[in-house]
Image 1 (tube, rainbow over the protein chains, first blue to last red):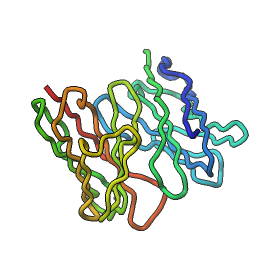
Image 2: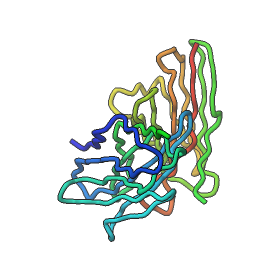
Image 3: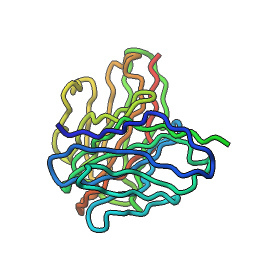
Length: 113
Length: 116
């Protein structure tokens, strides 16, 4: 079955510390991978995406993610977290045909001062 | 570019009434639009795929007679929740894929529906 797993429901990180949010996927076709961020009551904002090529992708707001095919992972990282990064983060997978995305359950990020 | 809007952004209605939510691609044409539903503190779940000029394809467990989807033009899809009940209260988000193809979907800001 096709699925996305985000093992961490809630993570708390100190401001200025590094962050890694985990994402594992199970997908039959060539996966196209996305990370989105959602603030309370708001829609989704695309942080970054991976279609092909360099497995380390850079996104907005200083985020990056690394695609590891052997581990079926697409973990999101940021070297130094800001208080404004506190939000819900969703990993999603799609295919080259552009069908609907499959989302993980999300990880809530809290930032402590 | 690639902006998707939704209207209204939030709506409160009485039980038994119908509510229409619009999803528009503002600066591109979209052959396909997707409707997702998100319950509080949960992930997005696909409800249906809407293709311009044809009937929507609903996911298993989604009542097509309750959630009417119309994709009448390349820039507009509507979701009508008929005879709404409190359990239909949710956050509804649409996304659109360009006519010119491509793998990326562009998401609208969502519509918060509260049924009293």
